[in-house]
Length: 375
Ligand code: MG
Image (cartoon, rainbow, N blue to C red; front, top):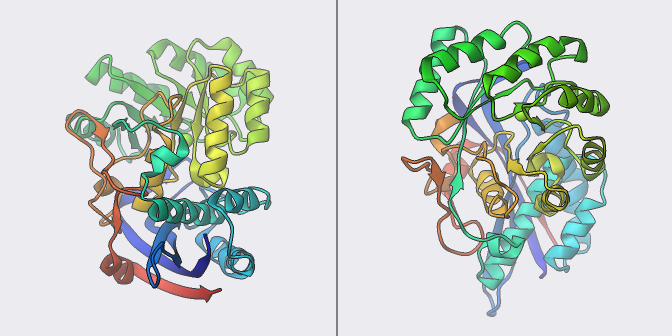
């Protein structure tokens, strides 16, 4: 295919409630949307593909920010793509995978490439990625709350909404007692915790106590680079460790597998640098019998939907962190919005690409900056 133009739309949508984890918080969701155009099959026809690069503002959740992503897209990726605009979707994916750094920018651009490819050949994204269409179970993630009562209220609300599991964020001093309280009030629900790398191996006692509380998994207890320490901790626990921040590239995933640092992986398309590399991460885990699930940064509708298509691959076997559009955001830029059924599943709409439509009026309503590049 031949790319004729690339547009960037930086959008900003308020969160309903601040997104708060052990390292910081944010109340506005930024994303850079990428709109690619190519010639269609008939003369004069244009085909459009959409992607989303979705780092959180403030650099507390990832080193990449909306500003760094915007700059990398404008100053490097857009120019290099349009300098050689005629390539297959797979050639574009290989080109992006070989560029070091800025995984969000690359994931957004690659998402747009795959969507464009799907639109051109009228196929759903899951089919191109090698998945099988199925409803994806959704889990609710609850940030650090101001009080225990707030936390228990949230757990109750999300159980009522049908979510397939509850994940609560923990931090030193706010851990075992929270889980005990949730267990006491709600019994044997599917429950997990996420520490976002806030602990050290010397805190192993906390995890030994959590180990007695029947959790599905303990997500990223130690630092991102503490791969061998995770192996040590995992050997002391019955509860599976799930690595998230540490599982951010194929090299670290192979190290995790080799050392036995985790029994579950959280795969995030944005952090891996695109659907193509995230698919390879899934395959590497599958080859050694490590189940995974699809995480989120969290993203707006385009990146969430594309991730859900990837989550139709067979080794994504735990509920995803992708929730309903209305869970975090005051609005979203796709139609229909992502919805979770009463029994906790997200069903992908039919149609080419991601199945959802991008709502141009909402893109312009929430846009704070734009740029256009032509071949
Ligand atoms: Mg996590």
